[in-house]
Structures are given as structure tokens and as C-alpha cells.
Amino acid sequence: MGPRAAAEPSTSGDRNTAIEPHMGMATMGLRLDLGCGKAKADGFIGIDRRKFEGVDGVTDLTQKHWIFDQPELGGIKLQPVNLDGKAGFVLPNDSVSEVRCSHFLEHLEHNQRHPERVRFVNELWRVLVPGGTATIITPHWASAMAYGDFTHADKPVSEFFYYYLNKAWREANAPDNDIEFNPDGYSCDFDPEWGHSLHPDLTKLSEEEKRYALLWNKEAALELIAKLTARK
Image (cartoon, rainbow, N blue to C red; front, side, top):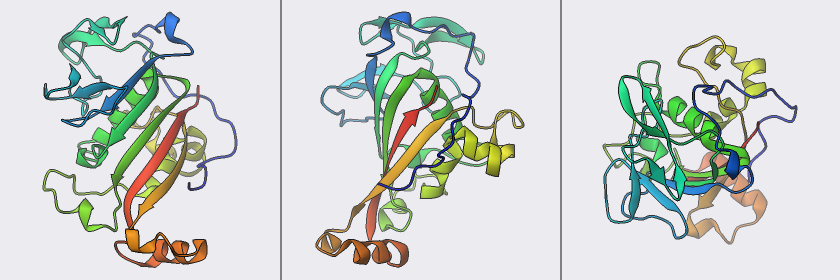
């Protein structure tokens, strides 16, 4: 896995205080497969914008708030809200222990007009328990997989994206990306680490040769695999 984004402790980002914590889920919590489509992982609750077979909850993950029509998910009661002009139900704060998100994030826009990836990680952080984890798998930006699907956003997901998810790193290096100075900015605080799935032809190389290939060779990495741990 790659380097951690920041070694120093930081204060947690802004949370939505209008949404109450789910007091019974401090150590457990739901296991969600976000943007699962038709391939929900075993042992996870499937979330998608379409009600495919296996999908347990339908919501638009591109929005600031993940609003569901159903009042319950995975055995817990969701909180009734009226946010962004839409009535429905949302996950309580600190109600999710683990998230899997495979080949979904690259479909979200990432620019000042449409900060969908920022909204996604902010809401992800809000619902995760302290120390909860999210594994996010995307096509690597140097792989042709990142460019074939026209529903992918124009910016592939790169390793550097994950630095911005740590509040201490933002404070030191990119304060205008933080919610403190930018209403569309990051409120999340994660400890990120990452690694790669390599092209099969590279798996027998030495570690030094693999590092060289990742730096300089197109198609060396097929996927970028990040693990985010919620700091609260």
C-alpha cells in the first residue's frame, strides 16, 4: 500500500449536526456496497441509483445527501429529513462500519461546477463510525480502462486525490479546498493509503522493477485501490 497522507493528528471536519447519531451502532454498523450495480458483494448491503436485483437501497450518490425513500435499511431506522428541497430518509451519523465501492467513483464529476466526488467523500465520512473503513477501487489513470467508458467523468481518479481527504494535509497544503474556506469543499477527515492491481505480466518482477514500471509504464497498473479510515 502507498504512504499515509499525514502523520500528524487533526481535528475532525464539520459534520451535519441536523442529523442525529445512531447511538446503538458505535462499534458495529452497516456494511455498504456503494454503487454496486448488479454485482453486490457478499455480506454487504447494496446501494445504487437503480433497483437492480440485489440492490437493497436506492439513492443518488452524486448528491450532497444520500436521501432514501425507505425508512429502514439493514435493520436500522433511517432519519426523516427534508434536505435540498427533497423529503426522505438518510443514514444517521456514525452508522456504517465498512464500505466497499468498486468502479463507481470514476463516474462522478470532479470540478468546481460539479464537485460530486467531494460530496461523495463528505457524506461517506459522515456516516462511517470512528475508525470505519472504505475500500475504493477505480481504474488506474494510466490504464486504458479509465478511458473506454463514456459515462466516466473527464478526470480519472489519481493517487493524489486521496491526499485531499485528510484535514491536516489540507490545512497545510490546500486550505481553499476545505469547507472552512469553500462552501463546496471537503469536510471529511480520512487517513488514506493505497496500492495497485498490476498487469499480470508484471507480477513476477522484483519490487524495485514493479516500482519503476508503476512510475513510467502505461498499463503497468490496472486499478487504483484505496483504503480510507475515518478520523473522528
